[in-house]
Image (cartoon, rainbow, N blue to C red; front, side, top):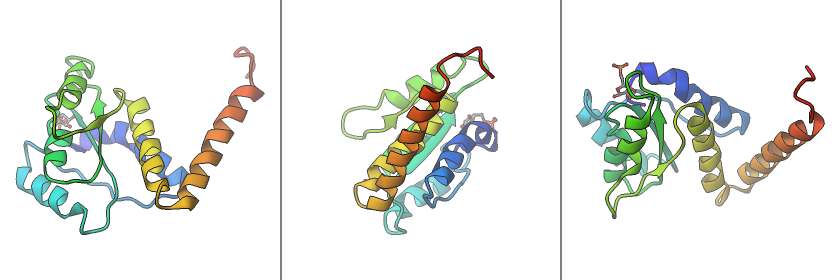
Length: 155
Ligand code: RP5
């Protein structure tokens, strides 16, 4: 993520990865404040064995796109909600990549962070069947939880 201030959003990705038993690392790597670290992190990700990068940033959110420019790994971008523009700036900064360097862009905020983790699980699950099975179980539990409480007035 681009800043420690993004953690309140990005922790939802981490918690979802925890729930799925997927190992991961958490780093603040800023495209603007630590550009050399960002390049080094992205360039070394594949050889270090990482499979997917989830990049969350807000405002002029260059982190996901610049990360994608430095790695062939799938990069999932999470637009963090900004104070001034409520994350619309983040969303447009991340989603409007030029043809040739894709970033899989998720929703603004918590939903995007959770879904980035779930999408990462789908990708990782193609190579690791145990992850795919845990993802299926997560989805099944989610369905059952909705079906078990059809009346929103219930506690
Ligand atoms: C972006 O600027 C970060 O991703 C963060 O969302 C935003 C604000 O950062 P701070 O000023 O809170 O560190 O680079």
